[in-house]
Image (cartoon, rainbow, N blue to C red; front, side, top):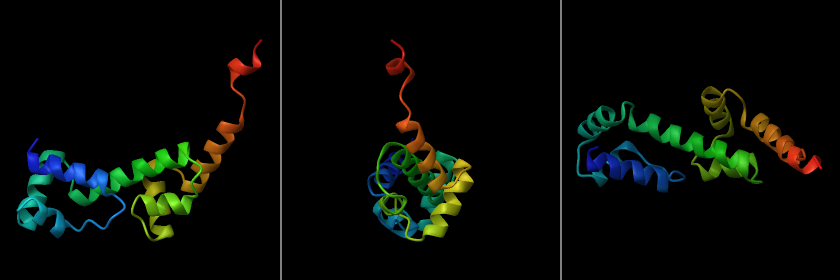
Length: 119
């Protein structure tokens, strides 16, 4: 992988809560916006914006399944500021709403494990 793309992907993962405009990402690796977008798409198979959205939504799912943070807190931690936009993108990628996933995760964590009930 091109080291500029690898560096950018790493920055996206580290700074997903921040605004990461395409121009700033391109500037950080000393490329024009068009050259950066072309190189990123060639290396990753998707645009930088789609990759960032995928990283954010994957992290949101993990946080909703494994933490007690509110949906609103998770949304902010992964870089979304509009609840309806977050819910729409989340549903599109994961097939369920953030609230539904949170509810299912909470129900699963409350059920006793099978090994604990067998004696």
